[in-house]
Length: 173
Image (cartoon, rainbow, N blue to C red; front, side):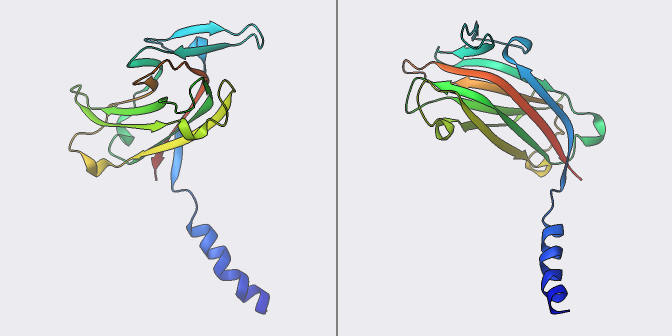
């Protein structure tokens, strides 16, 4: 009986901490199957797979665009992104950015995550995973468009390679 009374608060705590977001979109994008802007798609001769390389100032790379349906545009959203990346620069300037825009084309939110802390060694593929949460009350227009993209703002002779981009869009229940 004492064990049950001891376990009850722990079980209640675990249940109350469960994820309050549900997945509405989940996509995997290999480098050759996603929109590109200022990057180069390269076929790796060793692994026989493609990757995206950014090396110019202000270069945008792999871009994923999502148009949320009307019934979830007013809800808080969490955008989770992950993938494989590498760089040749120890103090990398590589980012994955997330933007949200209104139907009128007004940018409602822009945030980026520096991947510097995910790189454990230069010129070695490393996994990254991070997320961004946007709250509806932060602006007056509902979001109409979400963009997730790789970005290299200030390369300083850096090559930023990204192999695959995984994106999950979650909406608060």
